[in-house]
Image 1: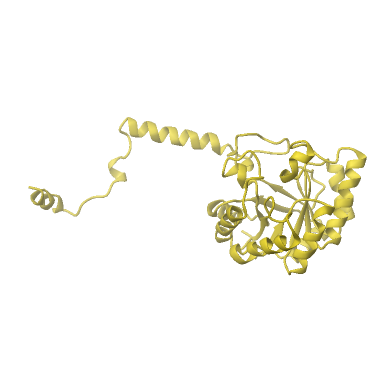
Image 2: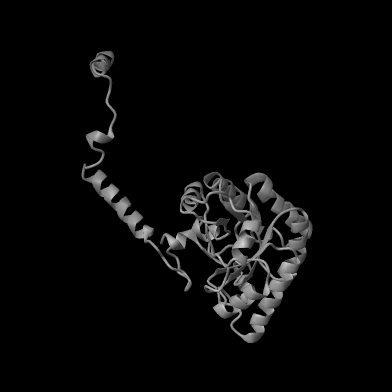
Length: 282
């Protein structure tokens, strides 16, 4: 467990000293508490909860209320960890005013330390306004799931020189707009490295190689819980899905065959009270 909750300045110092930041998603109290006990530097309450919690096909259906609800639970589970709330689809694209209002909801109702939103130059006005409102903003470029339709699906980005240059330009604009950090998703490591070297702010990777200032992974992937698909950049450290299914199956088998509950799993009446009850029931 970390000695104290990190600040944005601590995260900046880690970049400057080339010390890697490690963070993970969480969507509920117990996952957040485990992440904090494991010493994670940050937690993201990602809109990936749409797939990992609600079983949606993507992140687009996720609402502000859902994100706030899960962010509240995560904050209770990880009071000593830097928590980032993920702005869902249409919570910031509609207008600058709406973006500031919804970012404020994350802070007022869930107590997050920062918010994250997707997009490059086109969301810089929102980044600037939220930052001017006294809130920390993290950018997110590369594969941006909320706009995957425009990108042609969940595909790696920045694989040509022209596309990589566009990402670097977006990264510069995001920094200039006032973001305190940037997440880069599903781009070649060389491109992520150039973004890291170009920006003064921390640059984090999810599927963008080890040249970043830190790494983010989805908790459901790390634990081997999410089974619908496995991105190329995922490393599963456990197979909790298989273990959980086996545990459920053993439980069912024990009940059906009379092995559960055993006497040790039950409560005893006070001595002599059973006889009294039988008399009362006559």
